[in-house]
Amino acid sequence: MNILMTMKLKLKYSFNIIFEQEIMIAEPESRKKGIATEAIKIMIVFGYEYYKKTKFIAKIKQNNTPSIKFFEKLGFKFVRLNLDSY
Image (cartoon, rainbow, N blue to C red; front, side):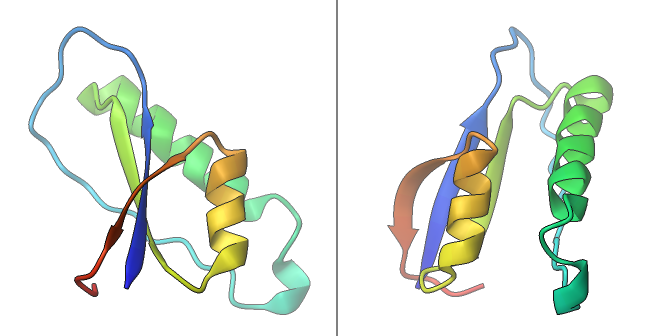
């Protein structure tokens, strides 16, 4: 099971371009340094500036509490529990 979280920006126009980014900081000594935060912020700015995207979705495994908290800190909100695995 996965948790879907979303962040919406307000914009009048939107295009049907979908892109996906995966972020994983695998090395423990590289965690908690803001790398993932900066990567996600850059992706959001890029999606908004170049593709006028206003909705961003994070797919997170239900038991991945650190990732859920990470995306909540970025402003993402819980949408639904998705029973389909990715």
